[in-house]
Length: 487
Ligand code: ADP
Ligand code: GLC
Image (cartoon, rainbow, N blue to C red; front, side, top):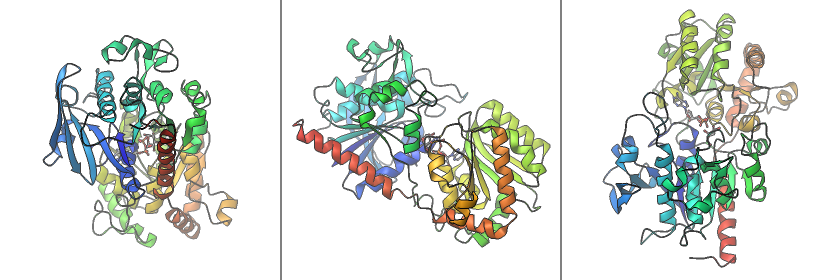
């Protein structure tokens, strides 16, 4: 079976967060289950720079006002279609924002065009390849199934939309409809219309054959007004086709026994060797070598991730005799607060503003505790990497965090299933309490080693979740066949 996955980022070619990890890992695990994925991504300049002899398989002389080419290539084990449209994707900055951190003003067009091309591929644009199913991710590619609805050739192809983060919805004024080449009837309550505007994500929710999100808990949370971010009505209207499938982790990219990102003298296989890793990590962040637990966070520094709470508790960690390491990038306010805390506590708090895959691995292998104080968290992957590398997670009890970490309460400790510390609701005071609990447990080396071991044994490989995606794909393709809507 052929699957077309459409995404705005894919690891290792281009990544701003967990979306890339997921779209990079899924094709590999689904191949073993009979699904061969081709992934359509924008030809951002850093992506094009990594391609080895791509083949042009289609030329668009005028794709929404400018020429573009569709390239085919295999890179990092992924079969890719890359949309090389320089007027849209060849510019400084990241996939979504310029170097100044401000969103590219034409994102409405950049991602509409990507989705249009995905729909065209589904409709038979390429003579020798057509998908049996289309899988879209987040608002950036959600428009694919809207285009498919209005295409005689693509309408019948089954599709899945996965919501990785409901906070981003692609909402624009209704006059964009004409500019992105959709008919006026798409501006309706059962398609793109959203409180007088259009919403790409809502369009996807209304038109995909099935909608998933990245954990069952987040699926339950977002059908309520509290975390539904205004989309709960649209989601409730698709309840029969909506489910949560928790993310796994790529066991090859995050493999403590064979991690190319780690220095040779790092040893993550044995927790008794972690002291050495901790030393190396602390040196990298210019921290002093006094004893005490090393807390760390690898995160986007945003409100969602509770970056402000990290800044609130930084000094307390230092005054209790711990260390804090932060690797992250995001809101300037949060970055400044953290840098100021580091300035006040040299040797105790180390902050690196930026995005660096290498340092992220170093932190998971050397820190004692990974903090993730998210206000909402569809799944979260850093806590899973932490578990596998023997760092103990301190997390807020929300979304995927609540179902992947087992709180170290007395019952869970004596049942030998605890893997971390949870707090709720996500406030700085509650985070402070959880940090105190972690300090307390850390002082009991036997208890601490048990927590680490239990975490390292937890299995968050893709196997189980891949099975659920494969089941879903299979059911959709099957029911499509049964209804006789085969191309
Ligand atoms: P989200 O996608 O919401 O940011 P996830 O926990 O699902 O959250 O995924 C985050 C991914 O991005 C992880 O792979 C994490 O290691 C990585 N990451 C986040 N911030 C950084 C950073 N500053 N440097 C390197 N990797 C980072
Ligand atoms: C989003 C979510 C995160 C999730 C990731 C991958 O970025 O914020 O919780 O793990 O997507 O699905």
